[in-house]
Amino acid sequence: MYGYVRPEKGELKVKEYQRYRGVYCGLCHGLRRRYGPMCRMLVNYDFTLLAMLLAGAEETTCDKRCPVHPLRKYPCLDSCPGLDIAADETVILAWWKLRDGVRDERFFKSLLYRAACLVYRRAYKKAAALRPAFAAETQAQMERLNRLEEAKSPSLDETADAFAAILRAAGETGAGTRSRVLGELLYHLGRIVYLLDAADDLAQDEKEGSYNPLRYRFQLENGKLSQQDEAALRLTLQHSHNSISAAWALLEPSPYSEIISNIIYLGLPAVTQAVFAGTWRPRKRERSKL
Image 1 (spheres, helix red, strand yellow):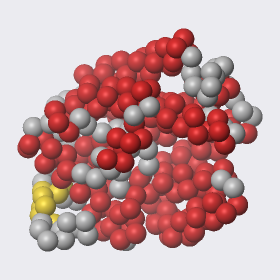
Image 2 (image 1 turned 180 degrees about the vertical axis):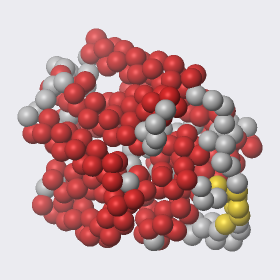
Image 3 (image 1 turned 45 degrees about the vertical axis):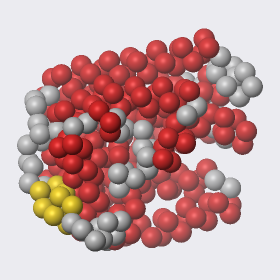
Image 4 (image 1 turned 60 degrees about the horizontal axis):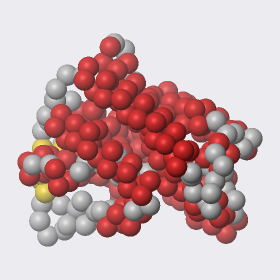
């Protein structure tokens, strides 16, 4: 997926890191159990946070092996409703990202996306049948985003809102205050993810002539944002980060509270700084494995 939503590993206690890894591994095993071994490739940091938010206090673990570490078993979160929801929604969003790749990429590169769509088509149909509301909202917002891209929209708010609405729908799994608060947290998280991805891809999109809202919103200097424009983008990111913090303060504690706080208050700011400093891509490759 995107991979911007991760903790600062060095600031986690050993037991917190093991618990985080257990959720990540639990999501991986959940994808395999529900959709087959190929869907394990869809596991990502972003929906690991969603799994922790949805799992709440439903924490039971089991020891399992995986293809990456076949010689020993590792504790992972056992099946629970929150983990299953995260697995289903991972498949749905991944499918629409692949469909977006088919539309955006040139012919030969789009063939890879077309092949992946064939591989995951059956899994998507199953997930969409289990989560029809989320599937419908994801499709509607991705189509809206495509229209904005075709119109070369310079609006950061409109384009970011389309993706943010998808993550908000991922957390609105029921009625009540908690669902609304969780939806607000995830909405602003989605907004940050979209804008960070735009900033991270800006130089490449400028070189290739691909759509990027920052290209049409700001005047670039040698393919980069000016100091003034970067400050404006940082300000809107900070606004969403403040909204995430406010929503998080309203949610009840859970076994994952310390990890989630790490992601919100340390992980996101660190990733944001790395993106603007131009050091995120090398760091992302170095830390691609837990």
